[in-house]
Image (cartoon, rainbow, N blue to C red):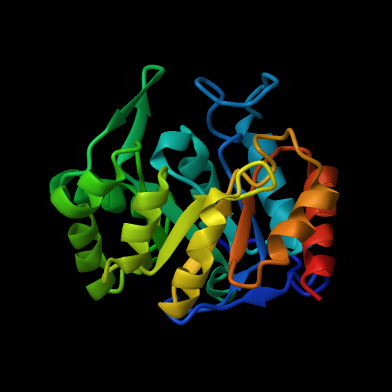
Length: 273
């Protein structure tokens, strides 16, 4: 298929931040692609419709044209990986190299129910399936999608060690852990194989802020999930507040409203100056 000629030259220059353990810099704000693939079991205050494939792909393409370079997805996000993959398959290798693509392992969503499996076999199957679905030979990060049993996953499942094999094979760039508990976040940061954590941080959830000095001292990246508390907080206040913490690497923000997403990217970009 001929690469799609998206206009990458005339777009919002979203700043980047770095961490020693990441293989490349990351935009300070990126897009979480949950809503293009799944609405069942979603913890949002208002219901929403999943867009058609055509509309979802148009949204992804426009976000790229606007300057969004970080795309976060997961097998548990329903159709999300598949729809992203159809767009990734159409862009040029040079354009793909500008992106930071992350996905996850450990959770699937089947027949309206989340299922968790952190075994090495499940991790291997999940990563290979994600690479196929995303139409990528390489993804920049894979996060462990914790179900809350952080310590058992980290120390007993073999999940992280299985991801390390893919990193050694240069199939993934960085290993991450999306933590649900403060102790899990601390242990993930101290784990020698883990390069990044994904934590919920916003003005109504400040407990994880105490992890930032540890992350910085170890050269590990901090990605912020649910920065607006599922859409209940004001972006113009919250995004600058988050980015004022210089040891936070990037914010992952969701949504389907293109104008609002553009505004949030501008807010984050200006806050980073």
